Length: 345
Image (cartoon, rainbow, N blue to C red):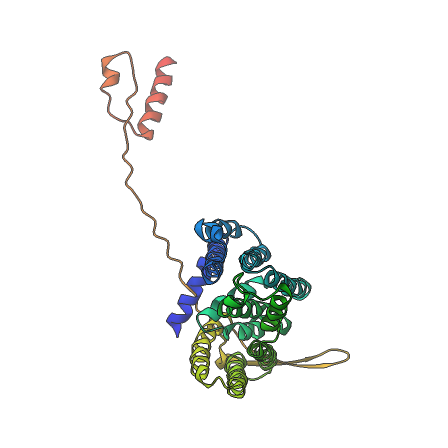
């Protein structure tokens, strides 16, 4: 345990020392993976896939706010959908406008949650983000997670039904518009995940506020269980029994990830709990103080000392005796000058 705490302290020291560069690198990696995923998932506009658009945008996002990263991602999706179907692009644009209004109104500083949610959804562990919202911030920040999950399901539905919106389809524009609205707005599985994510964020926030030992760890476990129960019940109701094992595996992996995050952010030492009681003119206060678990890390600095080579400088003089005079100490110089003054007198 002590070694883990030392590793944690060294990690925070490294982040604090190189915070600007670390955050720029994180934004670059997230942006590049997200933009590359959009182009590989859709690929309807060849110019976006042929040229390194994702790399250029990711380099820009390294030094720009996360909100612009979301804007570039939405623009890429709309351009790809426009190449497939104008009606699909219109419906998707309306959905994104609503999501951006919610994001700017409530969670304008949590754009990274929105970007990470679809990325984690691709690898099957989106269940970490609602728990992170309830554990690290306020429960209403789950709106950013909901926005990312909606974008994930939009991409998923279009990829699975791309033939329905292709120009080769003989359906009219009005029927394509109706099909696009039906596929994107009436997905029962999407609403199931959104409800489970919102419930988990609220439950985690409420549990971590309780004055009990290991409240944060209990909140993480309860949040994962809530998602597992709701999503599995919904999948059974919808008849998608085969996808339950993916949910179980994803929840287990998400639980391990969030336990690590909890250790890095809320590692407390419950062996040194203190109870403090004081009062003022109107109230009595009963305070439970739990110290943070920390270990002092020695900052070892190795200084390399090199032996300096001293060079003796010989004073130039007119006589040969002066040039051959050995190096004098300070005491010899004072005595010589004093004798010279007496001889002058």
